[in-house]
Length: 361
Ligand code: NAD
Image 1 (cartoon, rainbow, N blue to C red):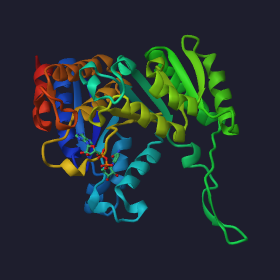
Image 2 (image 1 turned 45 degrees about the vertical axis):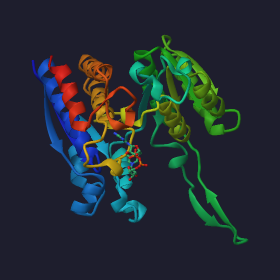
Image 3 (image 1 turned 135 degrees about the horizontal axis):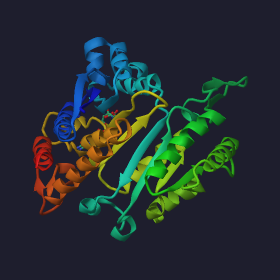
């Protein structure tokens, strides 16, 4: 029986529309192969939404996202909107989307693809086989804790304040996502905190440790964040799944991503308790190459694969897309960002066509 899915597309700005159209074509081909029917609706976000409506996240966009099975986002932002006040800038659209859909878990895979191993700045033997998933808490911690702000003391001196805070329920829900993720992967979970100094981290460690009893098949370990940063560049293969708070996750997920050396290849997922998740590449809107058919669409395509895996529960369809990406690289097709000597330089469109050819076989 045909499975029907309503997908909201948010192409956004810069290279967004170019890479999104490749992902949509890939999904349509996959749909035919697996008897899935995707109904796509496109909505405005970021700079494109500001130009059209004056708001980076129009309420119609949020409503459409809420009423769909999943959301595929490309990227937002660009020079044109850089001088607007922060609440009016394209980035405010992203934050509003995360808050509006209560997306508390951010999943960022960092996997070395053998065909691109030379793109890493680390030695081949250190990164060969790296396959890490960073699960970052996204709606709590020091980015949202109160009090926050810059205050003036009685003596007239200014003080900047942010507060790192996690409640037991916040730790429990991100912990559950992380254990479930680890269970589906290599069965190893490393929780990262700063429990030797921070009380909030002591509660974090206690909560994650308590949850471990529900997941006997997952091997849990703990690391302090400074050591985790060191281990990520020293011996990254020791990690399978990492779970951590908002601030530590922000930093460590970028460090993990850079083990792979190629920003145009990295997808991500942001998940809530119920309702649709948002799937998007890690990179931005690349305004420097927008409209020139130079963008690498593979992170966007891999984001669509994550959507199939996590929101739509179609792991075989996801596997097929991920394998097709490996195959186009095996056939030596490269966009400019991952180009190396002896490879075939192609644009966004041609990379998409090469993918479709493999998927249509
Ligand atoms: P960026 O990721 O857009 O670009 C960094 C560099 O990587 C550029 O040289 C760009 O050409 C290249 N690049 C990025 N994605 C690529 C791809 N798919 N194919 C080929 N090359 C690619 O980061 P930036 O330049 O710091 O930011 C540009 C704009 O994007 C800013 O307005 C920023 O706020 C926004 N941004 C948005 C997001 C998001 O939508 N989630 C994330 C980061 C930055």
